[in-house]
Length: 132
Image (cartoon, rainbow, N blue to C red):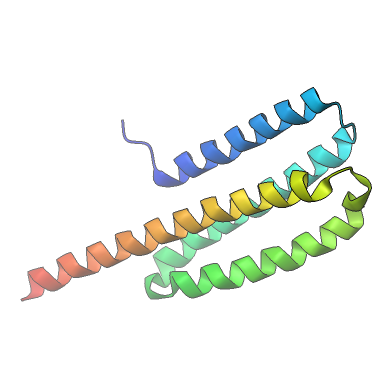
């Protein structure tokens, strides 16, 4: 049984969440509701980016990179709005607890987009070889 590449990235994302929540609980920081709301929003954005990139790959395979860059900008704008709404600056060391998970999710999204772009290039080169 082969696991799809997007499943691996989703599993890695949830492992990051579990590890971060375990550390959060051991440090007794509090603000659990803020933490959960932030991760729900981050999960929603992560799943949106992975889904939209997959859709772009099927419809416009040559524009996956542009779509990814646009999604990253859209995600950053939404994150700035949500950070103000959740009052994350009230949480002690909020930069460590909220910026690092955002960056890890961004790395996972980037790796997923790179994998999709590379898969598209491999399939295009094999089509070119067949046509010659």
